[in-house]
Amino acid sequence: MPSDRRFIIEPEGLPDLAGMMIATLDALRQLGGSGSVQEIDETVIEIEGVSEAEQAITMPNNEQRLKVNYYLAWARTYLKRGGAVENSARGVWAITEAGTGMTKRAAVVEIEQTVRAQERERTRRKRKAEASELAQDDGRTIVAEADAGPADEEDWKTALLSVLGAMDPSAFERLSQRLLREAGFTKVEVRGKTGDGGIDGLGVLRVNLVSFQVYFQCKRWKGGVGAKEIRDFRGALQGRADKGLFITTGHYPPAASDEATRDGAIAIDLIDGDRLCELLKENGLGVATEMVERVRIDGSWFDGV
Image (cartoon, rainbow, N blue to C red; front, side):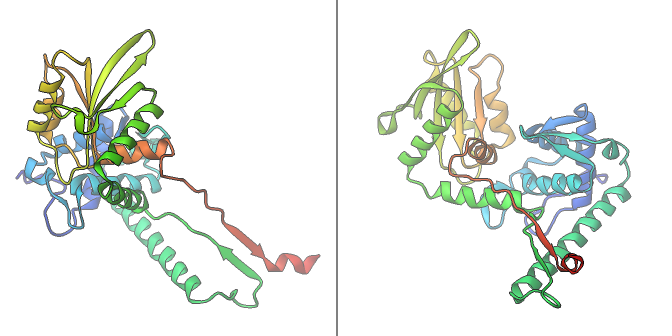
């Protein structure tokens, strides 16, 4: 393992978050200032020389989530709260002017320490509020708030993946069918048990004046979907489809991703558990986003009435 690595991924213990933060900023610079989550993660992995063995390590309490991706998400969240990066509703992350100037570890360590201090204070306030339903002091100041912590984004995905993993296979196929329809596919059919060669269904995607017939496979999967499964799926597509789509609650190791985009073969798009969660959220399928309002009553204001 290179001695200049800024973080390592091990089955036990936490990776160096500050190292992941500075590596994320370097990845965004290499990508031209912005990139999708997948592009950023892949670039960080390449820059740092993260081994395939490290990439395969999953979270102790969730075999469907890769540890390196989980903590890189934390790194992005900390950087965002520190003003170093920003993200759009479409999932594109971009480095800010402030982030562009952060090239030293000390800068991101300061962000990490600040965010951790904010979290400790948030936890303290929350516990204090839960300990008493009465207003503080003379009852003149009441604060109601529910801020999202840096891990909340990943927590809801973990919970959602648990729900998806418990679904009946036929129900998961119907969910995939609904998702494809929401994404603009037409004539979406689910073959169920009559499917052959790993094909669970098909649909038609129209892009401008051109239509593509897309066959898909959707699998509730713990851990990684290997290159063999991608090859087997492609074999079933020969002579039938223009493109393939593989949907899973698990993840794809590098070998599977390489196989999906192999030159001269039918292209297969991959949707892993993380992306599946995002798509369900974007389309409002079983995932609702709530806006939280913070209300403060200033009792002293009424003294001047």
